[in-house]
Image (cartoon, rainbow, N blue to C red; front, side, top):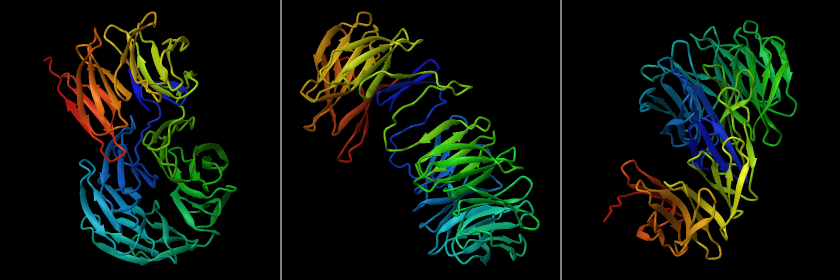
Length: 516
């Protein structure tokens, strides 16, 4: 997927579809192979989102949802996150057997707590700021917030811990695979109450605004427990889907995330008073691991489908998808700034849409694996022209300074050409038998000359400079050992090229092209 910008209109493309989005209210996509299952989420004091996954912690901007920082600090999956009272981040690792404290501003590691031979499964911050965490060996540890020394070890459960929350009274609530919920005194750390009310492990806990406890379980139920008597006030039967995570909205309603990996993985909103289901959202493709509420009230969900999704607090529509999946994006739609309604999706080609460019008059040009180039009206998005000029798929497009169109081809039958098309008549002005192999990318230099990159089966990957008037080759650059996948022109006129390699050779190179 790639993008280009026309004023405040973003254009994106994928298989057979072209879509448009106002500014940046759209899916965040990428070919990031390091983006794994989202295990946990937290909201920083400045409102930014923190996510934990395979060995990494990521910080996401609360407005643009762009990744501000990737923290590589753990040796294994980051299973849990919490925010300290001073704003610093606490993270716990699975097999990595560590808890780390990260500076809220620099994101440097301030402290590493080594926990021998056990998993860290859940974290919470007490009202006095001390850290509570649960381990897979069914022990709860209390650590001093300043010295990071262990103040207390509680032999809490018969099986591993799954969740921790702090009550309004300051007491600790823990849930476990031993099917119990336990309440612990905040000062003595003695067990005040054992709740045996479940038929399966406790996956999630939350505290309602009135102080009552909410628990979710693999027995497909959500239960509400009185904060004083710890009696069960309500049992919500979910039917078929285990409850993996819980959160409380700013209006007090309950949000639950579910899924068993086979049926629809849903988010459900439950009324805080009647406990009736207000909304059911088909949210993810695999079970959800975490839910948090943003400062503006919107819901953030993380899933094993490798996405983080942002949901509007009122309409419950998906505002944003932070996506690092390796699978191709099939389609995107246009969303307006305020309503997030789809403006237009064009089913324009008979095969993959491979490239886009914006003409000087604002019209859109698209290229496809169906061997055609199409021009689309900028207002109505109707197809104004279809050009059948290449013998194989169109790989790249660019607009020259005089407004004419440049296209490149990805030939399976030896047709690797660059073509120049008249901006008004769309007649072919010139065909350049350009490279010995596939033309992969194009750019226009500041003086108007054309730059092209190629992918060679024989290991010869070149960049070529073409005269803007005669279209003769001015220069051939042999610099990459793998496919030249993209090109850009810097403000100082230098060329930037990127490559990807099947042999592990992936580079970015800067080239200075002199007139002589």
